[in-house]
Amino acid sequence: MRLIPQLVLVAATLIMGAGAWAAPTVIQGVKVPETVVVDGATLNLNGAGTRVKVVFKLYVGSLHTSKKVNSLEELVAAPGPKRLTMTFLREIEAGPFGKLLTRGVEDNVPKSEMSKLVPGLIRMGEIFTVNKLLVPGDVITIDWIPGTGMVVTNKGVVQGDPFKEPDFYKAIMSIWFGHSPADWKLKDAMLGKE
Image (cartoon, rainbow, N blue to C red; front, top):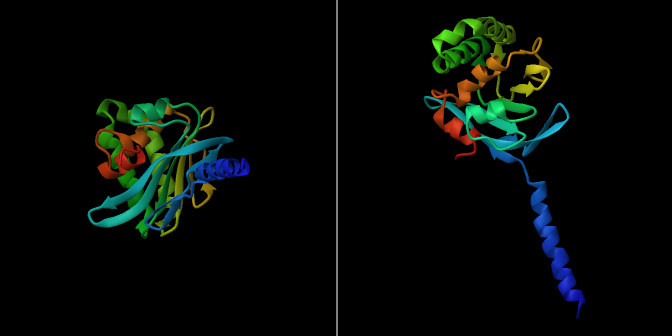
């Protein structure tokens, strides 16, 4: 008789524990993992969504952080590494895409601060110019690693030296999370508000 309550307890524990192995989120056919490891730290999915321009679905964006963030300021202040991932859904010329990123910074950073960002923006532009074309399935990650800086990876290959300036990282993140983001719905989705 005592065996049945024990079995029920074991079954309930197993069912509740199954949630710990949550399946990845799937958006537009792209599997977005619940956790990623960056520089030895396990980061949790803060949020994910689709970047849409006019009617075209360009990429799935996701944000992984050490703790839940709801704004650009919270993202920059969050301890430890952070990762923004773009998984492309359609073919895009990399050069013009890089220029869109520069415009995104210009839309969100005061003009008085732009001059100190120019060298980094030129380097970012070169990263995208060299790669020519982004095709469906290509993945770009932008990692912030304390003590190292911002590391850009395209198709699994680190692109040049890290960008060491925290202000530059904040400016790049403002493209998605600033006061004038490239896509409001994607901003809300990556901040977990959707």
